[in-house]
Image (tube, rainbow, N blue to C red; front, side, top):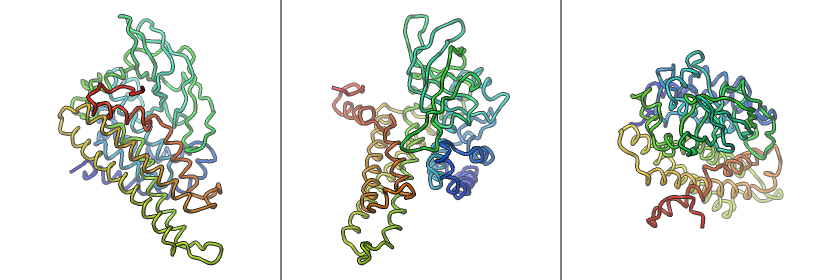
Length: 393
């Protein structure tokens, strides 16, 4: 039994499915506006799906990670950008729940519906000061930032002993300037704009060490002793957060291409559906997409079960999940590109749905989560008996 079998989960999954036609109707609007419509975010709140990973102590549902992950897949059937923004805002409840207690109180005590966008790559070094750090700089790719009350900023933070470590710092949006620079190839509706901070003070209690998140030892463990996700190594589960979008997009692209090809006539004479080459290429693409999704589901199910069991998660398991998600993404990307090629010149039209799906897939593939040097090489090093690292020669 997994998390999606619970009565609470079934209700939320049903509510997510009910949103799909609404998201599909607004997909063009989101793309044109380069942001998810406020009405969509309001529905995410009203249905309760943004509270899936929020701890019960602060008004959340505290459900297993696969419930959240399956909701992302469902929403992608309507609009990939909306599903991406949902994934970001909902998953960040996990990071907030990992903060010291006072940090969580700062965020949720007076606004249980508060959510956070982010810019997690540590691009700047904060300045140590009494009680915390001061931070300045430009932090790009903050999906959903116009709908968030807080932002999670990754930064290098110097400590009193002379060491420097990466921390995630929670900053209120009122202290941030949003720079509207989201003009991109794909995921156009995510509003992933740049955050500009000018000498903003962040107290220690609104920060968490990245190392503690990845080792499953954050301060939030003491705040939520009954919440197994807070104790899970971040790298083990986070691969089931954003990746459901491209995996679901692969299935959507396959269905779209098959429907288009079934009724198409080449040069007014030959039905493409009768071509063995078309049949072969379509079958090959379907096999790649199905295999990638099957592997993804196997890893997600066993990972959620492992976290729920309370047993220690090994480094090999973390690296294997990262390996398999990247490998699956490569299959999805290749298959969708093949479907576009198979469908011919029509995919060059902006109005063609396959073109939009390919643009989204290509954009998602640039994310660090799918970088082979970061996700495949460490597993190869593990197999060779070497310590995991960047793997670069």
